[in-house]
Length: 104
Image (cartoon, rainbow, N blue to C red; front, side, top):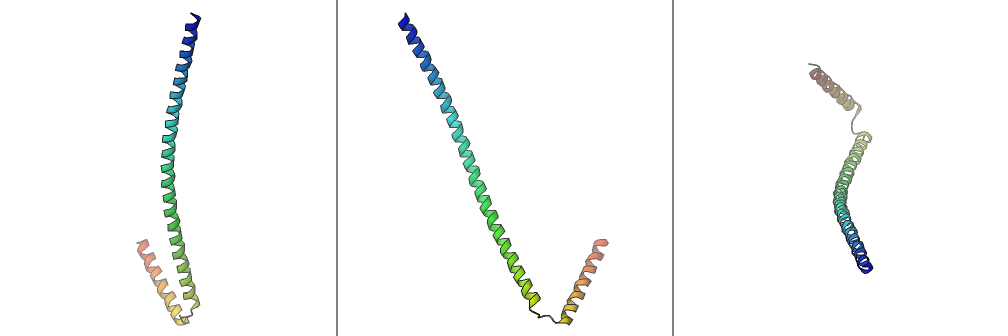
């Protein structure tokens, strides 16, 4: 009889180990699935980040070109004093027209 109880004890321990192994396999599978989802999210965010970096570089390039053009426009002295005054007058007229249309 004591032999049988050792056998039963051994089987109980074996069943317990099987349950633990099954539990760990399930948890491992869940962790792997979660990691795959996170890796996909990382890839998506990296692509989005790259697109935003390209967009920033494009905007910075346009801004630097605009600043260079503005500097060359101001420094060129291509506009005489009379032309500048005429341009200011025209801008003032356009602003007045816009104000009038906005108020009405």
